[in-house]
Length: 544
Image 1: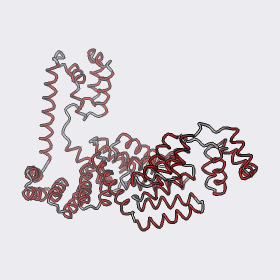
Image 2: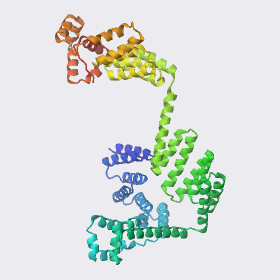
Image 3: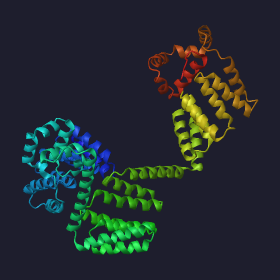
Image 4: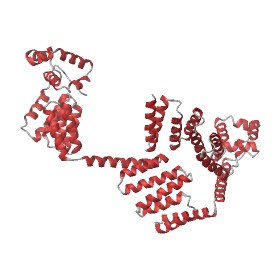
């Protein structure tokens, strides 16, 4: 049990590192089904959920991790980092402080707590924080008009959401919530819909301007100047004046060396200039700067994606997939996922083409024919299949493998190989003949006649084609039982087969379990006897 859990954790960690986050979550979940009190599994799955931006489950798993092992510091950092990313700084600070009480010297918590406090101090003030004020809620519940409005389920839900996250100003554009606030604050509630829309637009405009002013106010003069240089660089970049753009991005980096965006912008210029090594180097610097300054996952993902794009330009597809996986592990961008899948198809096709070797194909075909002569059809099939991989344009190998499938009663597969062979070489007589025999075995006599007819077009004097065509023309729909019995009693070989006790058991098993036929056909001696009984009509095989 413990070893199975460890194996699942190891596989999950590998999948996580490779950017296969969904697979990692599945493996951690399967491990939790075995060991539901494993705090490390909840911690790891929390990190995986955070990568997929499933923050609700990330927090839940972090909380479960803390519940199981309260002294496991990583549980606190998992939860707090998600809360900080969601800009719920006060909640994040409380969690960091709880973790710090357990391990006062933990440098990671000290650093992240300081960053959370700084972010909380720099956050723009929220003019609608009264949803967290008990006095306002009491006024809300005691106001007759407000109480009437709260009977609406959607309005009640909006209030609850604002109580849980007062900073969620996006909800304040909702007409029902605006009307409720107006009722409590004594604002005239008889406004027309158009007036409400105007107020919404005015509020949003003020909020945007306020946020912009607040953001600029928290930046140093150097940072503001750096932003201006970046904007100038962006304008030059759009005009494809890359040298000018590069000069502005360089100035921005000198003014604010801790902003990874300036480095990724410079990498974009290098990409356009086909300076691949410089682009890779710049992206690596951007990622290091971003990690140090807790940049948005999306920005780091963008840097990795650009590195992947460089490797595509260099036709280094294996490395491009590596970088795309890293990008997706930071942020699951559908466009990057699509790019990665396209590159994986190219790699697969390259590997298929690189595997082609006509000389080795001939060797495998010879081995297949050798086993076929010994009636060892499974081994013959294996070598013919390898020969096809080594030279997929050889129609004769498809014909040979079709003969193998015929012997193993896999008529549909035999038919498919015949069609492949005919597509490659429409004049290959054996493919048409084997197609006809496969269709006859499947009781599709009209199509079989057509196949034999094609064979006669290639060779009008071919005895097998003439016989097959005639058999299809006069073939009765069912074997006459009396005729079958007559053949069985006059053929000593058939009598010997039917009197063999072991064959009796095999035939009985085939009657009860039709799929057992394919298993018995792998034994050359038994296969010969079964073919004999089929030929005389005692065994009737029908394939749909």
